[in-house]
Length: 555
Image (cartoon, rainbow, N blue to C red; front, side):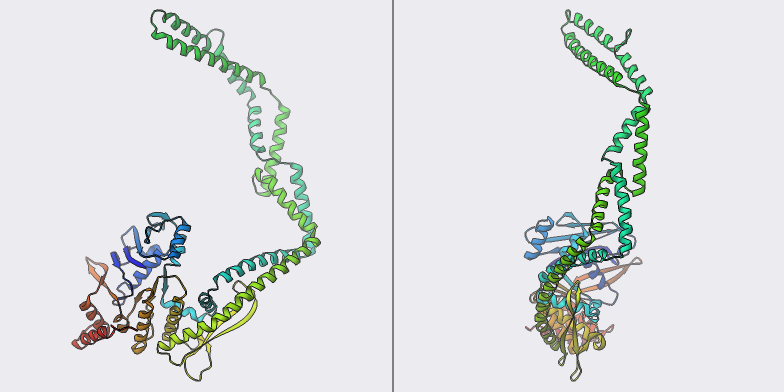
């Protein structure tokens, strides 16, 4: 679960540290106080896309850090797979946002990437925001909920792999069935191109070698002059370096007869003399090997011109030309052996489709088996949430193979007696959507490994006893998961195990948001504000006190 959230320079929050607890954590405050910023900060630490505009005005960067305690085995394994330690069951995620747009991420103090944060967060936190309820309007999402409940992930992964192989082969078959005249045109073109490249017989590294040889031939006179100059300096008849070193060595050797200190220097000069003699002989050999060959130079120029022309024509480097020729030849062989390859491709494609269909049917059977139970459990949860007459019916339609299998599934809903179940988008109100999504999340909570659920204003469109039932359901979920809930409903806030107040302060023409954990008196005052508005009466305070006291019972 998330134990501490630290935020720095995010929107109106300059610095803020929040210590969350187990159970139901509720966040309340006036509209615009900054509740959504807390969710934005959590989204940032989860590796979600975050605009640099979120950085507080006047600051060059923003920083978010989240600490997690008692991480589960799934997270520990994921950390190990990503190359990180679990630090004795704890986890610290950090992200710095810079005004330049650059992000810096860390996992347990070690550098990480945004994708790593996203990969970890899948099993850390599940956020349900107001917008997510509207996803129920799209039937395409319904099958995902059924798959999640039914544990269909392994079957879906197996199907996707087989479906992908089938689509690859189908694409190749479609290409093989293309227009015959186009095939002949491509054969003609490839025949010319492969002949041209194979006849050229360009070798890897050839261009570099020819450039070097050309440079030597083009600068023959200059090289010859410089080598002779070097040879003369080393062994010239009058003042060569070899003679000078030999004279110096001999003089010091004679001087060492009078002072032994000169003997070592004389020996060093002797070594230098022999080394210089070797160098002089090497330079002489180089001079002897030099040749001026205009015919070879012309041959090299023609060869380099061919290489450059082919490189421009095929838009590649000279070292890539041999491989390109092989690729073209392979494609040419496919086209020439069209009938044989096509028959083999038809058989392979049919076999791949059969395997994909078999996997899809296995997946479909599991889905349909899970769907009825899933719909029944969601319906029961919705009935608890003040929708006593609701009916939920899963409907399946078999379709052609597509990335999710052969099923299109939709949850049809009837909210009132006598009404025929219809698509969610046609009959569900905002409040009904919120309760349906909460019911789905409650049912799915028993099947996933996420330890922290966050509900951002899940009470949209509800009030009264329905809001109280939503609060009771959140309380129930919090018995097995840490729950964070942003709410405007006193009925929900009264059930909190930990209640946080988000307040906006003004100082020196700047806005600051603070988050504080409320004690009993603070909770009474905050609930009274939610109930009574600006003017908090004694009646509102008494009602708030009663709500908190009445909430202290087991569901």
